[in-house]
Image 1: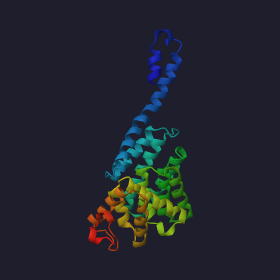
Image 2 (image 1 turned 120 degrees about the horizontal axis):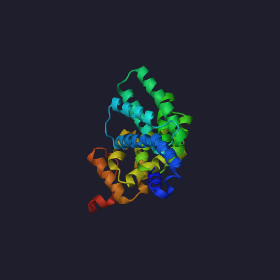
Image 3 (image 1 turned 180 degrees about the vertical axis):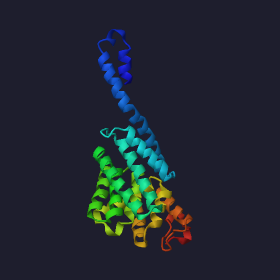
Image 4 (image 1 turned 120 degrees about the vertical axis):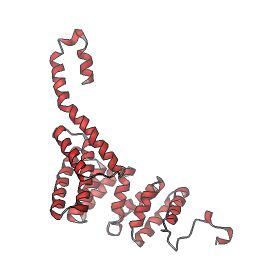
Length: 258
C-alpha cells in the first residue's frame, strides 16, 4: 500500500496507474484491519507466554474481534499461533472454573481453532504441542497424541519457550513413552538447564516422581559444570536436594572427599 501511494504520487504515472491504485486501495481497506488486529492478538499472546494472567471475557473479546476483522481466507502463521495461544488459555480457564458442559464446548472450539491454525501453519512446533495437549485432555494419552509430541520435537527441538511448556507436559509421561521419545524429553530438560532456565526446570523437577527425578538428574551429567552446580544450588534452596545426592567434589572440603 505504501509503494502504491508513492507511485501514484508521480504525476507522469498517475493517469496510467489510476486503476491499479484503486484496486490497491480496496485491497488495503480489506487487509489492513486484519493486520492491525493481528498485532493486537499477537501482543496478548506474547503476554500469555510470559505468564501474565487473563480473565476469560477479555480473551473471548479479542478472539471474537480477530475473527471479524481478519478474513477467513487470510493465512498468517503468527496470527494463527496467537489465536491458538488465546484459545488454549481460555480452555484452561474454563477447565478450572466451568461446568462439564462449558468445558466440552470450549474443547470443541479449541479443536476447531487448532485445525484452522494447523491448516495455516502446519510446521509450527507450538501448534503440534497444543494438539498433543488437547488430545490428551479429550481422549487420553495414546499413540495419536504421542505422534503430535514427536512432531513438535522434530519441528522445534531448540525453541526454549516451546520447550519449557513441552517438557512440563512430557516429563509427567516419561514412564509411559517409548525409549526414543524419553531420550528427547531428558535431553530437552538438560538443555533447558543449560540455558539457565532454573526456575522453570525446578518446577518441572518438583512435579516429577522419584524415579523420573533420578533420570533427570542423571542426564545433567551431559551439560557444563557451571549450569549443573547452579541447578543443584536451586534444588537445595527449595529443599529438593535428594538425601543420597553427593555434592560436586569442587564443593567438598578436603576431608569430605573420598
